[in-house]
Image 1 (cartoon, protein in one colour):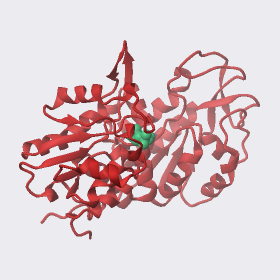
Image 2 (image 1 turned 180 degrees about the vertical axis):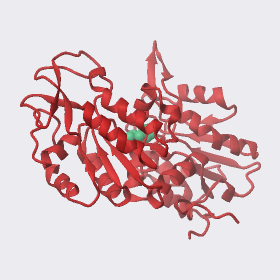
Image 3 (image 1 turned 30 degrees about the horizontal axis):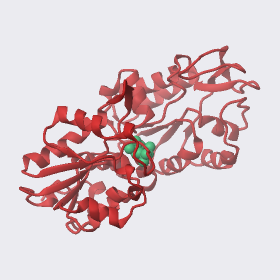
Image 4 (image 1 turned 120 degrees about the vertical axis):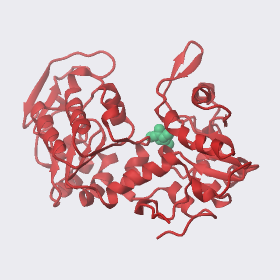
Length: 390
Ligand code: 3PG
Ligand code: MG
């Protein structure tokens, strides 16, 4: 018997379903993809998650199962919203694989997010087995995610298996040095994951809007930059720990009254070392910081990247994210990118295909790194057919 990686202990995999020939299998995928409005209908804007869902569906079909797939799309909050129908997603899926029925958006029914047992019973009715391949939704204790394994023989699909193996592997036994890059706007959303990474990583590199609360904790003036006063003490405590947390020394900032982002862009832009003058808003790490981060990343054996260094959709504040992302792609070690904005940045700057592993989950990958487990995985480990955990 081959031994499974520690991260997969106790988790039923497709092989643990036994013979699926002639069986009806319900697959929960995360086909929640960006849609764009075209005339009166919607189109899939990015099919990354759809492509990642194919191997499991193919495996089940090839092994003689009848497969029905289900997913949520966006956040309709229990109401039927025609623009959030699965129709364009099912059409895109059919370009890759035939003969898979896709149920309508699970979140049209309030009982999905309410984790209602009656909804679970309706979902599983007529099915012999359940497969969860929805890594991106596995941090949600929703009906379609945690309900079916209570009654049906169940398994993690290939995508979920791989996500857990790679992300779990980082937590169990990363090749060192292990450098984690954490960015994004809101510091409150990332402190839990930074706290957990302080125990696992050799260094943490911080950028994005969240960096300013750390800088404030060091006594720096941050001008009009994003700042969460309520988290300054917690940032100071983390900075006092034994794991080095790198912060930007120079910052690219926008003059008072300027505008930035996707729409209108105006105002003077300057780079400041140290304190940011009153009224100026830091929106990217500066060139010195980007180079320092890049050299830390290039010398690592394992790199985890979650969150951009600045407002990269605005070219005036994209350089930090581009340089850091380039280093992640060029590094000699293993590179893992959390979903969401960093995956988008990797695509935008054209180095996505040089990343070793691109997670399909944003929130899910953060929660998995923070807690080392997810509601969906716990549910699968409790399925009637689950193997003995070691
Ligand atoms: C995502 O896109 O992050 C996942 O599909 C989960 O969606 P949710 O954040 O709306 O639960
Ligand atoms: Mg999300």
